[in-house]
Image (cartoon, rainbow, N blue to C red; front, side, top):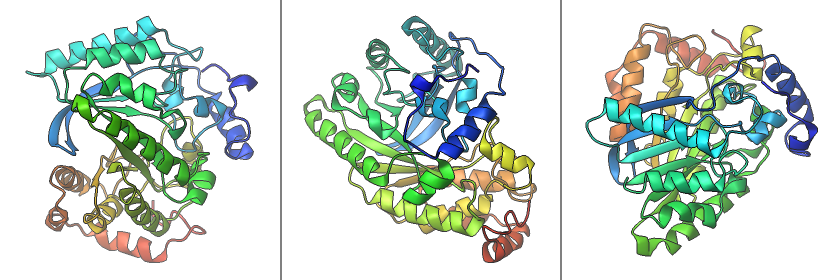
Length: 367
């Protein structure tokens, strides 16, 4: 990966010590990627404010998150998969979109109603995705029902969202909030903005959606939360998630809360801690506990544990992981906490012991 220059450092944001460590860790990466190939693409089903919809998820390969190039979040390794040099041309980005559409056409009988576009940074940051590309993507998906784009709060602006809404395309902004607790976001995640900035972004999206009513399109926000960032013990992480889900659901304009259990990604501070015995990804039982406890909030609450069942991903004992993952997916679609009554395993007793006895001073109590 190319070394970031001082000009792209987000001066005065985050913790200088974290940023210095993260730049050193990421500087060890020497892999390169094709700017004409998307990072990933897949088909699935997602719960939306309008019901369950077939979805096409696209992760564009851009020049990488500007905050990550400054140092960035302790758990995020996506910038290590970004294109060398820090920029990707409009032509290459549109080639990536074409290849994703080819993948969809080959794998599905009909186009997906929901499009989800991520960049492992901020889709609305024009240093990652130029305005020309954003408008071309809006044209490419104008006949779909809904689109989700990823962005930090800084880049949420009416004019950018209008490119989609004016085409009658309902638009959601996925904000990587991670937690509603500013201290945890600043010190454990090393993400610089405050919860108040998230609230401001929700207000901006809400106002943009009100302007677009005549087009028949809606605008909203999906809050992305991080279950168990580094330095939090399991019970602390669970308590923080329950508080965070409730705070996000109470913000007008935030209709979905997606809780992402942390996994150990390459070239991150979390990976360094993991190899030194200082980090264990969250238990899947913890995911079930949070989802079950917050099922009554005024928002969709979902989770998609990536890498479930592996040592580097959220896991239980290994015997029950797939069953619990299926229950979580079932909950995502049905929003019924009773699904968790259908799964059990002896390892739940170990999880209960961890929840009772693990602290930040002795974690991880069980690997």
